[in-house]
Picture 1 (cartoon, rainbow, N blue to C red):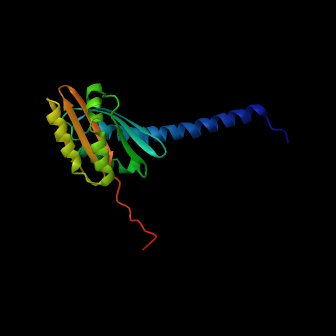
Picture 2: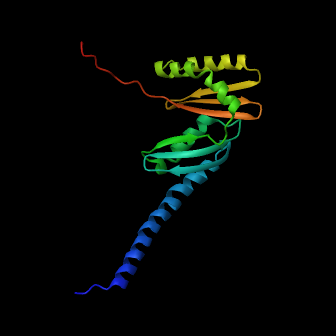
Picture 3: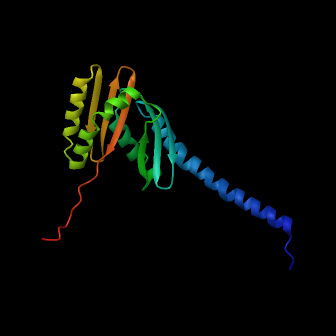
Length: 177
């Protein structure tokens, strides 16, 4: 039996277009668009761009200075659960960079890292209060839930948002018990 080249090539091309076009349409219509509408309609969100990978859902956000970061995260995680699935949710605030606030944040990194590592989260608001006393005009809001610690730093027109993931305590077994 002789296989004809043109019909075979056309069939392969059409199959590839249908397969990849359908996959792209599914990702765009069933995943990206609903998550995009959900996030952009949240109070305090100026703009958002969700990026969905196999293991991570990363959302590039620009927020208003008075936005409730914890509420935004929880709303995205709960209402976007069917899109996010088992993927990790990450919020990215890199478009709203402030060199001044980055420098101020770097002065308190050791205190925050120590509080996160030792799970003494009460040290974070204390460290933030020291920052407010040290830098006039700086306002810092800290909140926490069972998933993350949320920090908002405001200095005039500049804002920095920080989400620090909490890791649950692990049970350990000692060999000499």
